[in-house]
Length: 180
Ligand SMILES: [Zn+2]
Image 1: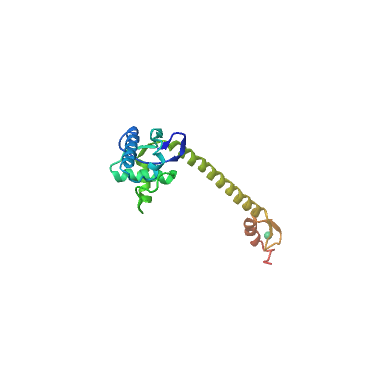
Image 2: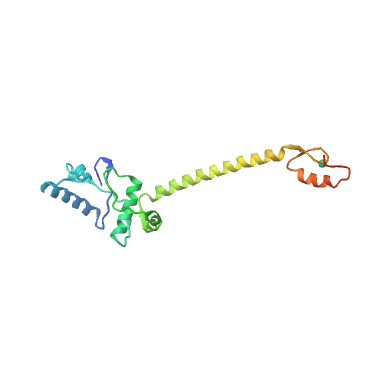
């Protein structure tokens, strides 16, 4: 929920009713609070002078088995999107990290799904690129080491490190050579 033309100041909430009803009930709540001379919460204070410019967008449509589950999903979005007008998370618990994957499976339609997917894929690509470069570096170090020339302990000939063990084996059985 946000005021028209001011999308960066938004509030995240959840409802089992329609979005339209959600706006109407928020508007009604604000009017009621003002009429009764009661204090307004953060989001209501933000909306109170522009009650008919409240906009609402659907972020996610989920199937929830309970109010608690609904709050958990809402909290997920609050944590991800940092809405400036929310001042607390409706649900917070230590187990939520473990619950996270379970919740995500329940989210079957999600406005950000495609974006998140692209983000992951982009990262994956970068990650693979990084991996490839690391392997390339590792291989070039290995190849350099293999090309490095060392002296055979038996015949004192200069042999590349990559071939030394084969050479050494044939060399040590040659009676002409003694270990130096
Ligand atoms: Zn040798």
